[in-house]
Image 1 (cartoon, helix red, strand yellow):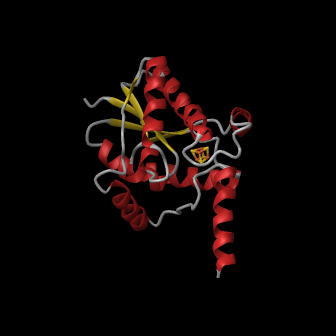
Image 2 (tube, rainbow, N blue to C red):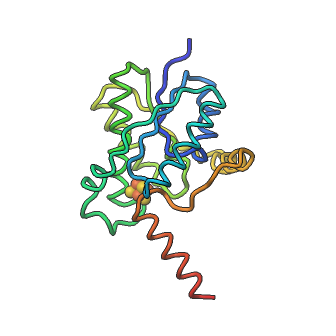
Length: 190
Ligand code: SF4
């Protein structure tokens, strides 16, 4: 029997390749806990795509609470942090903390996240938060850097083949605004 692993997911495009790889060694369950995603319509879109794909491949899917008020209150004062900065560390702590708590409560053998597949994220920041929470909850955290070995490229190809919706910002309102600024600056240049 394969060990039971709880996988934190933020969206289908980031998860598709990770699911394929982890399914070789683990009995997987997906946990969609992402109160950072803004606005709520975007959250629903990413959640539904992940849930539908989980159903298609026969992996269990569970959604956490969309507690955006709590997320905003914990990241207060960090609005102007860049991506990979302090706000992201708090954001990882919120999402991975809930995943680690669930993994302990439900007696999983290990837990991890798909987040390290993104080239825009600091892998050491993710793994550092994960290892801290593993100690706190006493459940093994699987360290990863999923973008390695062409992981991100393969994930993009797999997502294209599934015709997944792919967002152009990380998730929170601050990353959305930063992205809109970049787009506007490009337009102004032309
Ligand atoms: S940029 Fe992404 S990881 Fe950082 S705080 Fe926003 S949603 Fe979280």
